[in-house]
Length: 201
Image 1 (cartoon, rainbow, N blue to C red):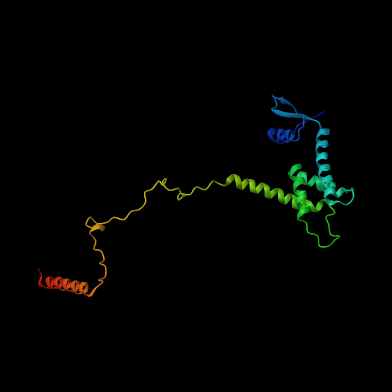
Image 2: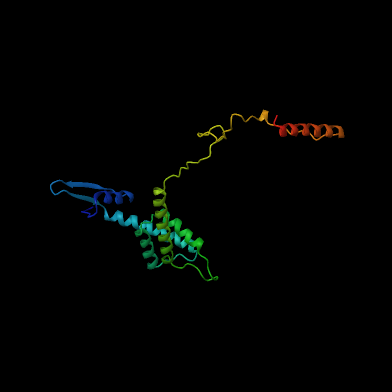
């Protein structure tokens, strides 16, 4: 076991160590107001190596060509983890990288893990941006939201009519006369009404 004084804030140090499941022993020097964290460098290296190995093993499985890997692949795995990508997400994005790859011919294939570093980091940053947008978006509430019949909060518009207007008093259309006698009688009635209007009575 070794003792080390970390320059980062104490909450970030603890968060990093706890996220990697590293045993922590905390010692506080109250006089100098310094925080010392005791941790095992062996455990840290083992945890990182296990994640790198898991990424490389998954790459070999997806490549489906031999079981060898190069130091370049090891550096690529370290770069992925150093970019803040968790092991779970790294394996998912690595699979997506192979699924989205479109070979130009039969011999065209992904031969190096370094080819996948860019797409994996891009995918990781897209995920972070989408999470930020989701946190900043406020739910939309429409003022004119539809309400079922019988639950409207505002009254329906009605037309105002004059007091003298009454449908019962409105003239109705007479049926057309069926015979010549009816026609002559109707004509005489109209002439009589016309004479009264002219005479002013």
